Amino acid sequence: MGEASKTYLLVDGENLDATLGGSILNRKPESHERPRWDRMIQYLAEHWGQPVTGLFFINASDSVPYSFVQAVQALKFKPVLLAGAPTQKVVDIGIQKTLEALRDRRGDVVLASHDGDFLPYLKPLVGNRRIALAGFREFMNSDYRPWFGEGIELLDVEYDMALFTAKLPRTRVIPVDEFDPLEFL
Image 1 (cartoon, one colour):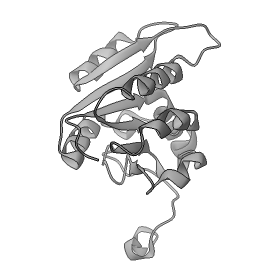
Image 2 (tube, helix red, strand yellow):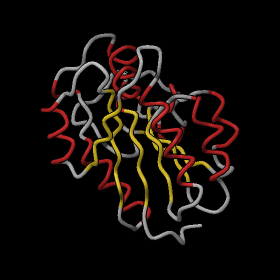
Image 3 (cartoon, helix red, strand yellow):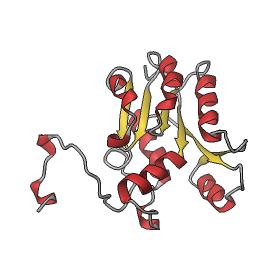
Image 4 (tube, one colour):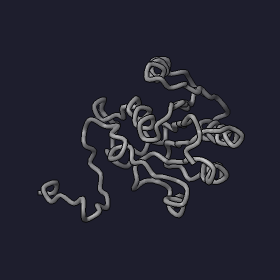
């Protein structure tokens, strides 16, 4: 564990954005409420003490969001533009193929998504490298729960990684040692 010389970060931006807008804010996020993606790479480089290769998967089936692609590149991510049939979940397929390809490469892996469809692709990577899921803790697919502490680390994008400049209106379970009643008064 930890012998790898790099971390591969795979970002399912659609999934994180949908969770932020649909489950936390219940509306489209305003610019100050959006994640600061560059903080994710910086956090992981410091957390695991090695360089990070960030891959940001984007569905480009209908059109290419060039301004977003340029922004992602400026943040040191490699945009992965994927297209397919309307029935295909191209971002999921791209991430699944990448996780399969990582079986034969050295490197630690962080998947930024809540989607449980990736568990069968992550399981074979557990044991000989560090693996983490990044997202909102309370919205992580429950199929991952048995793996937390058993080979997969959970990194909360707000509380651990500090990707947001504004405090999000989240309802969460608070460890009693961290409880601050002033937050509720």
